[in-house]
Length: 117
Image (tube, rainbow, N blue to C red; front, side, top):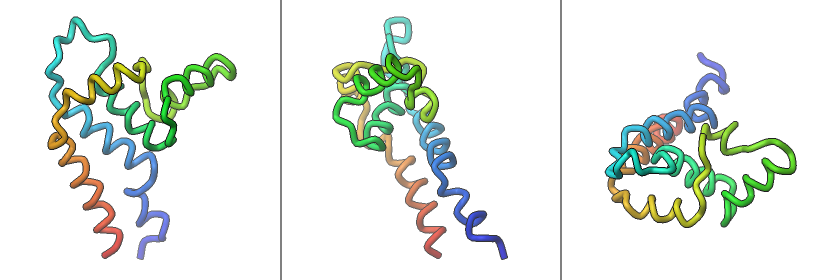
C-alpha cells in the first residue's frame, strides 16, 4: 500500500498549480496577439494567485515585495512572467466566458473525489 504522502501527491500545491496552468494554457485567447501587453496565461495565473493570497491588490503587493526584497511570488510560485495591473487583469478576465473554466474545475473536483474514495 502506498504511503499517505504518495497517495496525496496529485493534491500537492505543485501538482494542482501545474494542472491549473495546463488548463489555462488550453483556453483560447481571442485577443489580437501583437497588441497584448500580458499573456492570457499570466492574467489567469495572477487571478489564481490573487485568490490564493487573498489580497485585493495583488499586483501592488507583488511589485512592492519585488522592490523591497527582490522576490516575487507571482514569478517564483505561479510562473507569471509579466504582472498585469489590477484593471487590466479584470478587463481581460471579463472577456473569458466562465464556462471555459469548467474543465479545470472538473479536473480538480475529480482529484478530490479520487482522494475521498
